[in-house]
Length: 252
Length: 370
Image (cartoon, each protein chain N blue to C red):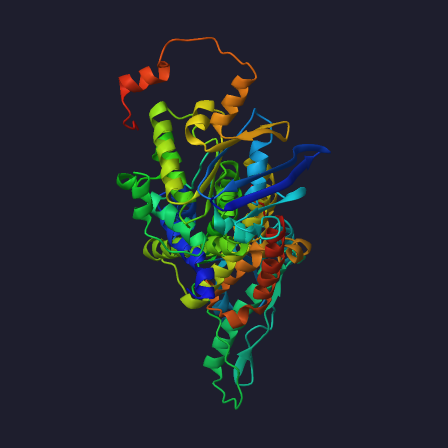
């Protein structure tokens, strides 16, 4: 049994006397890909931001690798990497230079090329971030987020707006990151993504976690309740057709 | 890595890359280097390379001695004095001074140049209006210097104790030399205030600063990195302007470059702090723009960048002395035109340091990453 790396108890965030995150508790095990699902306004992003020490915690507590998030924000920042919803970087700065700035921001010196190789952006080493495609920018942003060797990696809707090829590529990347021993916590609106990628998912609505289990178990539970989907005989969907026609190779 | 090295690494890395990327940005290059150079060329052509600074004076020669006539001729030939031939009486002179058509009037009384014992002697009077005090006083000093030269020629006396004060300002100071420091001030102003008040809100809106906030970089490290890279860019901009001014406008630099560089860096630190306080506080450009205008416009017009402060009413002069840009422009001007050193610039440095403290307290208090 892997050890627990993220422990959240009764986490609460209040705006205008309304609990946008309402006393949620969960724990994430080391090496897991943990998904947080839910409609807009459910409190997913706020939860992530509290865990990232970017937003004050109003109630309950959270620890990452045994360190309290509320009282040690700097230690937490060293432990975690964050992929924002829309990655943006300073312009006219080469990818290698951006990586240097970020590793230095953590007080470290790294070989930027190694990190670019990890996300297949070696040839773009001297390009500027503003000239990358959406998928390339997402990949570059992941490299930047991992430049200081964090233990936990947060991704907020990482595949929104990407084409199917870039999406698949990003899934592979996330798995690779996990295989290196990094714990992944991500939010997404795409259920196929959560089903394929996440070991466990928490479903949030109105600030509360209303279900938490592996995707497989959640589906089983629903079927047990007698849920029946309209039968369809096709063994493929339109996306499979799309990938079959256009191939899996990245386009950018 | 040792602790202090780890603290400095974010700063040194940021500075190295920040300076490089500024030179890749055509818009920034235009505003930091091109725009001030444009000013330089325009002002330089208006004033010409060797057009001496001059005072419009009325000359009332009430003496009929040969010495006075000789002196009058010298004044008329001298480039510093632009003698108004139409002034023939004290009333003429007063009227023209009141209308600011004259800076001052020089009166040579009827006993001026009369032989007294071995040498001719006399006392000239410099008359100026209240609004033109500085010009009048400057004129008085210049005349004093001229008389001192004459006195020495007439009566080379041996004085056991003398103080030798060398004023270089009167020797061939051109209008261009004077304006040049104003343009340098303008360069630092646009680099220090216009830059960060547009760049920081934009970085905030795009979430770039938020991304830095997620790292372990501290605000003071980020500030220091930015201040240093802008100081370097400021020094480069000033160096380029010096080269252009030397090559094309015959600039005379009388001070030393170390003192000048120190003032340029201090000026950049102060002005960039103002930009940092505004840009660091503002959530977006719409918030930053009006405030930076409110701060910049008075500085531009009241700090002697374009108009010499001694042309302002005294009351206003007392206020403008304390505007952040004034001591910077004054210091630069005194170094270039009079060869002043940091030791001579005590009052200006005190005002600059005072502002640096105020501005950075504000900047740290008001800064938001997003």
